[in-house]
Image 1 (cartoon, rainbow, N blue to C red):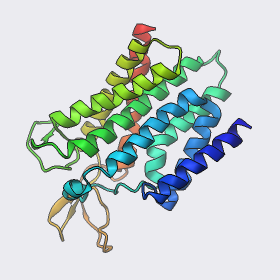
Image 2 (spheres, one colour):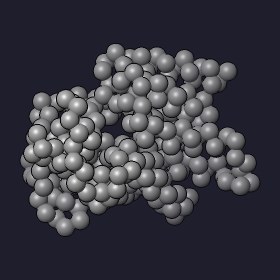
Image 3 (cartoon, rainbow, N blue to C red):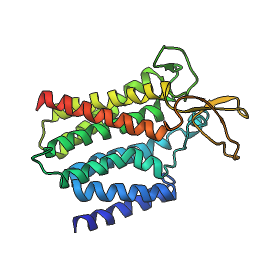
Length: 268
């Protein structure tokens, strides 16, 4: 019954998000799966983190869209999330919620799954906030590997504003965890902030080094897009062919999860 109610509630939220243009059809399917499994197996303490991420990222994606249009042209995908984005950002969390129920606590304590999940959600929130708000920075971003000034939207580019809001995003996830669980609120705040920041920086590092980047001859720009909107294929420029933006998000969030386990272990 808990899974059934989770499905109904998730369906309502997904329908509203699809109506507002935050999800594509495939993204709606992915979000429905993620929401059902997370709430159904994890309960409210897990679903609250997902809700904060999804709500905040959807709202921020529509914030000052016109000013972010130039930077968005570099990104692999737009603000309307598809199946790949839904699973990259929430699929790992849904899997962790499922494992927390079916893996015996003698092998992995339930709290370990939750801290791992907290770090994952802190990372995807921190990274999304950094992307949506960091592109509005008045100061040009610098490549995380060598400090070279790059265009806004360049993979691996970081700014003070983007880094600050990524820390804030993780902090908000930590705050939510502290309010919906019996764990120490200060411990959750620190865990969320540090894991989110660490995961976000790893995301930028992967974006600057191994993520597949293409070159658009028609626009004469680097881009994450494999194919232009008109169907024209772009030339591979650098990075590993299988390291898409979704894969970068997934790996970075996993790193953030392990950072959360380590940080929480220092306080609890």
